[in-house]
Image (cartoon, rainbow, N blue to C red):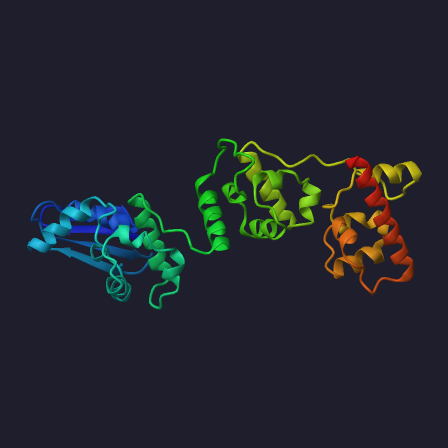
Length: 316
């Protein structure tokens, strides 16, 4: 099914103006009715093999009020009145009852407040978002700090679709426009700035978020000319004295527990992950789970001692 705009007037007769993409198309069609000219703008749902269905009809007559609407609807602006937009009566009544008269008043509201109103649905919100964008406006950010962070992230993701200027180290990670799941995982881990994020390697980041989120994060960083830390060379499963020491030197407190399986063994690694241990630093700072066997507990204790010694040596 397709949606088209039809203009009917004494001057234009029947004129098909093209497909209906947004509410702005209907307002532009009204702008074609100049002066005191009367006419109708029809939005039609056209489906093959069926008669066109009239979705809405906007009539412009010769009265003074309608002429005022003609002038204001021709070019949408922040001062465009809400009652000039073709909204559902229930949604229009909600806006007018709350003292909202122009698009500028509407842009002062967070989008979440519209979703909370009974009688305002997805179609209305998307239509208003498109109209505000045409007027150079957008909905206000939410008041809650976490919701505002995700709101800024969504705005950034929608805006930046091609390589952009590099972001500074102290910029918030919402400036990258990450996937919502990636942003949630990063903030839960305590990552607040771009500098915090780019200090991770892809392997370390995989212990914080899903692989899809890691891939998308790498792509978003590349858009801004940034990248994660390079990976340390992988070691084989068998360790001699020298190889084990070198491998320990390549680890950090952020290394995912699942990558420690060559040192801890399959059972110990599974038990730690089941108990909520995500990174090597958790092994150094938390009590080991009771379900660990004595043999596995000795192995984990040995690893913790070796890792702590390795970290202190590197700091020195």
